[in-house]
Amino acid sequence: MANTTTGPKGKEENRTGGPTMEKAKDFASQTVDKGKDFASQAVDKTKDMASQVADRARDAASSMGDMVSNAASNVGKKADDLTTSAGSSIKSFGETIGRSAPHEGMLGDASQAVANTIKESGRYLEESGLSGIADDLTEVIRRNPVPAVLVGLGVGFLLGRAFRS
Image 1 (cartoon, rainbow, N blue to C red):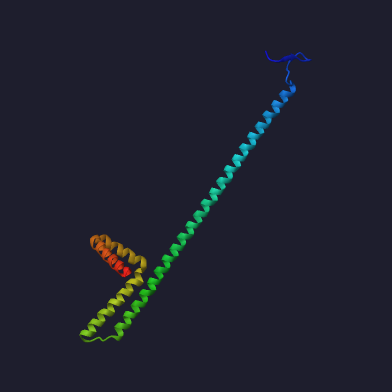
Image 2: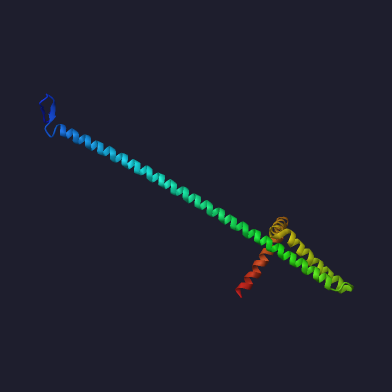
């Protein structure tokens, strides 16, 4: 058996400390439990803080996305406005040519045809804007894919030659 003796009240006691040892064990157990509770609370607080940081990062990214989207929208609107303005100027130039060019004979017919073409081009730019031009170009490419690819290759070849020189 273990090293035990009978104490003053008839109970067996451990020779290594008796009730003091039990108190120490209880104190150690309580200390370990408090340490576990403290560690658990620290982990929970860390998780909460990490969650808050992630939420703030998500909010910041969303705000940045909205700002970029608004900036792109503003740039697109400015480009449309500039195209409309250019169209108005071109149309006005065509009208000026139509008024000041000869109206009679072969030269008159040619100058009026040029003036009308310039006016119509200006009107198209003024009414359609850049987004309308992009839509029309997309439709032309969709209806004529092979010629569009050939034109793209030709333009690429010419640009390559121009920049290589």
